[in-house]
Length: 264
Image (tube, rainbow, N blue to C red; front, side, top):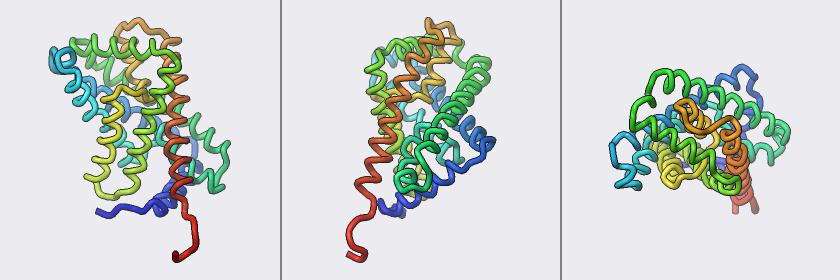
């Protein structure tokens, strides 16, 4: 299995950043909607497997979290394979190209705003049509599980949500970085599972995932309104930007960009 060096990886990521910032709006929208749907798919898989064994969450919370953590990365794996536009991944991936001057900060911000918005559309559409309307969370134990998840997330203090958002996207962007370092299908799958599974097990906060987890709880009758939804999404989004753009994209560019004399 070949693994790119850090300098080779940065060159690859700069090219990816240029491609992302030059996408036409229809193509960007389609890819972002698809990515939002993929993350929601991972979300419902994590609920179905993690909460699908009666009593496991109460008696074996670590096992329940592990099962959910093994399922959720399916969403990122599909995005990596099919080229979806994911806001949280783009937080890191656009940094090297921006620092190298291939495109400006305004292009980065524009990409983030549009991709975040269309991720939301994709996540909501999947949640309503393929989860709520399909009745996947109407029965127990899933009905109570999604309500409890939504209410817990919506009630997080902003400071806690922000910090958990930093940690979540640090993990997600490490997974994206690892996926870009390797080329084989099994290696990419493993690269998704380990960091993303870690953030799920530890209960960190991912804004695109929460575009599934909170709305599905709301649809099932949870005590969460629109203000509660954005009480989570705003600080978590800010934390995700810090975790991805600074702790992965900017940091890895600074520490791994080529330096020194050529040939030495």
